[in-house]
Length: 159
Ligand SMILES: [Zn+2]
Image (cartoon, rainbow, N blue to C red; front, side, top):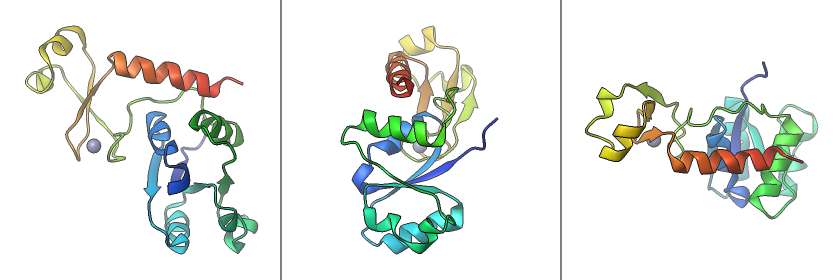
């Protein structure tokens, strides 16, 4: 078992937020311009910084190893995800739909009966497993969207 990493993603690599959440990692998006605030949050919450900003890499807390930061090199989200997965040896057994893609909240299991009136009838008929976000109350299930994301994730992890 690897330790469950947490991330904070700089706005210059914002596309990584969704994919890390799909993989089940607690991931914050930093949209401010005050790098010190991002660094303070990362230190306080023990998060790995992902950024394209070389200045952050030169900060003392980063160079002395107190704070882990990864300088993202590629332009495409696929290259970027591949770099992160590779650098941190992220678990191949990712846990899709453990975290809300919008709110970064851990999802809760829901029974079929609990979501009866909340999902389209076709989904209700064909799906048996559901998750709900406690913050935005969005319901997740393993439909075609989930399958497409799973395929995409498998591509990221291939060399
Ligand atoms: Zn949510």
